[in-house]
Image (cartoon, rainbow, N blue to C red; front, side):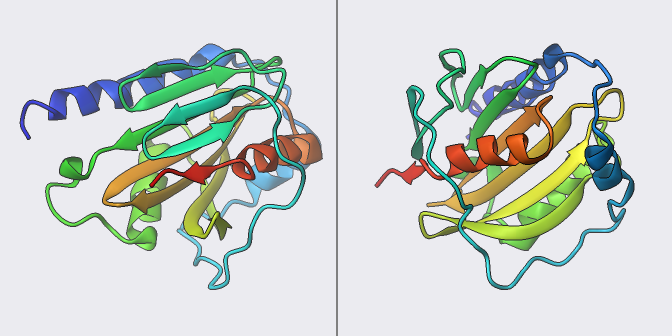
Length: 199
């Protein structure tokens, strides 16, 4: 157990390094600015009836990692996997980062969805997204995922995060996006609609 913990810390650090690399040009749309300013500083309650994201499925390369597979948009660059992290980017500063924290990282029972969302909100707000808020949960191939949204404090990039627990492992999928509004929402939904939880 102790031998694996440093590796997990390295994964978290790598996520922090990947995101700023997308750039900090202030290209935030007025609609996104409204989203950011209206964010509730306190965790909002999740929708008791999660919904599947609507829209078509992404048609880009298939990414395989434990405990899931998914497709990225066709214009995204090939993914690279580093232990429990898989990352890839498209144009205009759009990036997707997926992390897996093995069950042993919990040092006990994994938290429920609400507990996971609270931890993720705290981590993001302390890490440069002070107005990150919780949105209604979503269901992806039968699995409920928490849903967070906010903007990086230094730039116009938005951050959308989904997370869940699968067989004791914590899985998070982050979309750091320069693409805004409906185009951003369609891109994210297209990826979520290709997720398959591996047996």
